[in-house]
Image (cartoon, rainbow, N blue to C red; front, side, top):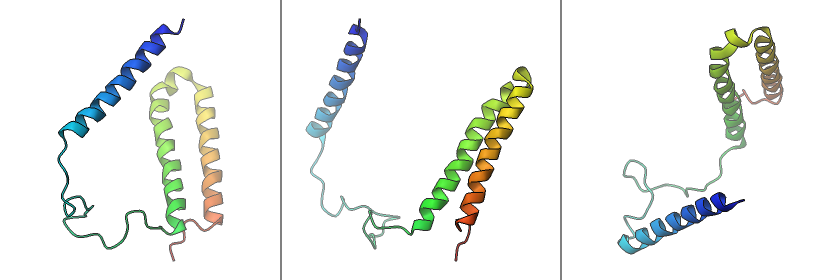
Length: 114
């Protein structure tokens, strides 16, 4: 019954382990200077996992909200004529929910950059 899933899982696990083994077998020992992360050839001034100000997290959530909005609006625009009035109603409900989220973010001060 689940033979196909088990075979696919075994192939995936074998492939991943094989690629990992091939990488380990063919890699060269990295020079410590070459193993450092860099930006435009410069030595980093701070750790890569340093903390960011909390306002950047809110800004990224707002960006994702608008990005997801566009993700849903493109396919909707293709089928709106075929589906009809219900598609328009659903999109306005979706945009209304996003508008409520933007109003909440505005109230919380997400758009203040000072």
